[in-house]
Length: 127
Image (cartoon, rainbow, N blue to C red; front, side):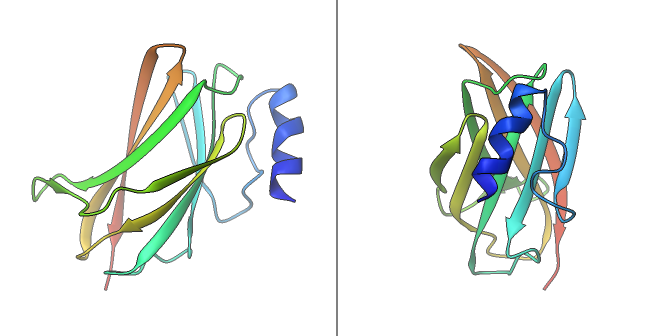
């Protein structure tokens, strides 16, 4: 259902609204990233997912990776998210767990062939 609406958007350029009103959008250096967390409010100490749709200069990247960490504390997550490719430039990452509240940082790596473009997004997780 969502995939069917996401794919045509890539043919006309980068998708802006295929994840709906609850998505966060980042535009930086030719990259467009839209993501949403599932559930919308990230629970502390419980698994959640992040769905990502991205492009570089209006085209899907050849790969997407994401991770998260807590820079103020100098650590990342205790879990490695599992990636599920959902189509060109569209992926879902399951099994993220923020084990404590505070300021976290999502890291999105988009690949254009072998070139990596990194974008980071700060988020605050409340108990």
